[in-house]
Length: 343
Image (cartoon, rainbow, N blue to C red; front, top):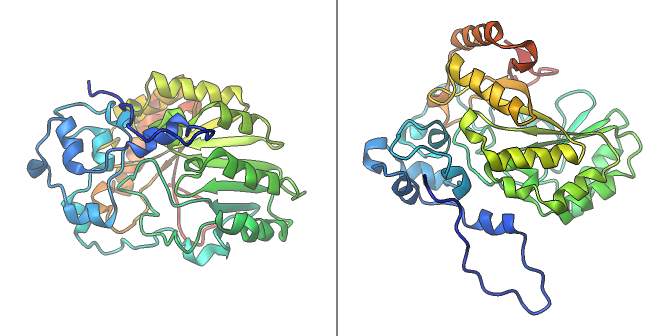
């Protein structure tokens, strides 16, 4: 087993200054070098087709606790495959674009995206604790389009001006990469918007860095005036362990509804056995399967694609094997559609 995140050597905080939360220290200690990652797993970078060019374009980042869930000596480990930059990313493929889901055309304010009736999505930040190689926003212009800029003012003004919006979705990047006081700054401002009924958070941090779900975050969550859905992102049963289970319990205790959305990925979860194990393991952790997305056709991710006919066959087999509430909806996001398109 690979050691979990080790303590950092940081300068002592200035006298009177509060030490940073533990999750931020673990965040800073993430593995960023493909050679180091493969050394920890006892794998040869030359045999795997690791690409320095792909890593320069979209850097590797993976918390050490997530690395500890990978299988040493296994080049096909499903968690490793999600984060390792490969030569395949640099091969141009027709139909794979920089903006795979039409985010640019759906802009409705600084860092605000409006695609579906009643909902506004905020690009809260461009930061993530892990850089997934299939990320549909891997080419997104975060420097120009982040809702947190200028104290959230433009983003909140766009929501307040449209009484049709009754749900705000925090996305990114990963919104929980922001410090909790920054999140509270947003939600304090949103409380002045009378037509809001729900808050949703799309986050991978409780899976890849469960230490993020600390007492400060859960206190903020429990005090919110709206029902809150936390939509997590795990693609394989091996992403869950005891630390993730504990984080899920803390989120449920804070009153959040927990859902999981996965992406169907070739070489990661494209078998009935892997998908069934994911649904059963997430439910064991108190997380209800929600969506199984077909891959968004973003440039650099073509090697993960599963054909639609194969995806449908897998979904039918999954439905025949599991109870209905364990079967996520198989969907694709299509630019311009009024909702996710069922497959």
